[in-house]
Length: 505
Image (cartoon, rainbow, N blue to C red; front, side, top):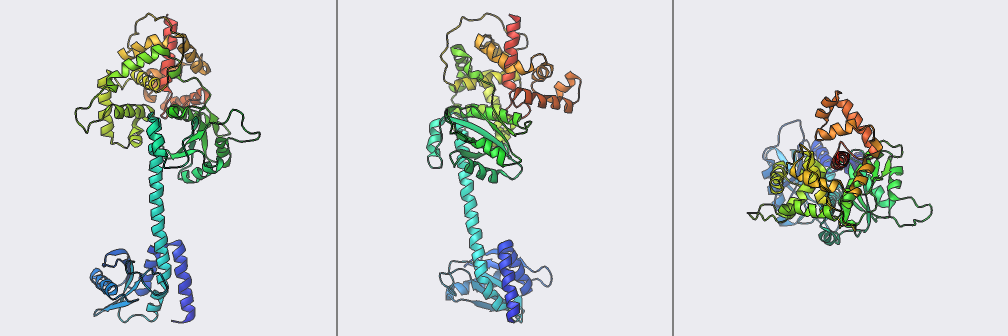
């Protein structure tokens, strides 16, 4: 082989190492050898292979390279060849602690070429051993790195799931092995990225707040990042820009929604708030919004509301499965909370099959006496779960309110009526609906139609796209998510029900 040709080959193999990896190097070698090229284990197992598409097929490649690899390993030599009637197999060990000395446990480069062997092929293979070995090591390290990243991502997702289901102590124990420590109190931030951009946005988020936030790739929405951030101090440093605003400014195609400060134990409420803020942020030029509708409905129901929630949930809390493999009360509570928050996407959040989810929901409905196909019962269950996870607020007990459930209201929602006529709840309802007072037709119709766009559009006498546009505008006005879960439809049902009961009194 002339020096110029060898130099060209060296440049080509190093270029392929950077751009194509092991697969492209082997494909190039197979073409140069006019036969077959691959990496085999010391026992002859083929790990990677490439064959020239044109020309005659090489007979019994596996047997040929297995024989050569076995002999190479037994003899501990630096190169080995096996001849048949029409082909020659050339083998070179990869790796080694010093130049020219192969590692007996490392893969072997094997090339099968027609006889006679082309001039310079043995030199070419000797030259390619080092770049091929380095390329293989880099790919092995990359696979290990991805496995580590996946394990860490799943660990963070598990911690978020524990926080969302109120299992604070377990979440803190699991989080102890990861960084950073879980802050308390927190703001929850949801960042919506362009497709495939979550990893880069996660790096921007970590850089923006010095790595203090707990960053999780959302298991439900492929374009979302969830940040559990330390709540800002009461008096931030002059000129300091909050990390969420920094991310919105630095990443041109992302949208950011942020919750109010909440205790770490109330991360689920913070997530709902951030998701609602995200819906409002999509329509803002800054692409950033903070949740501004408060307080949470669970904070205004008073002691009577806590008693109602305990009574409603008691069959679920005391449920004992008949078989060891059946879900217990905690698993059913987590399933209910996930389904109310994410609807059918709960299968991705809980990592269960849709049939498993449907079976659990049937059991929950039977235990609680609820029809989970009805928005009224969904709203009652959602409020009860939120009340249960919220410490009882100090408030003055009020006298019981008389009245009977309205027609078409289930027993669960009817038992809630006495809670919804409390003055604190009426004030909360007025605050929720204030932005749309006098223009409630679309909202009331959509809620009356169980939050379904098709029936609501038919009742309003408009097209489905027209109804969707109206609801999108309402999202901006209410600063709440309506069309995508977690949706505000439960709170809106409660607010409208409270106003209707007050008007009928």
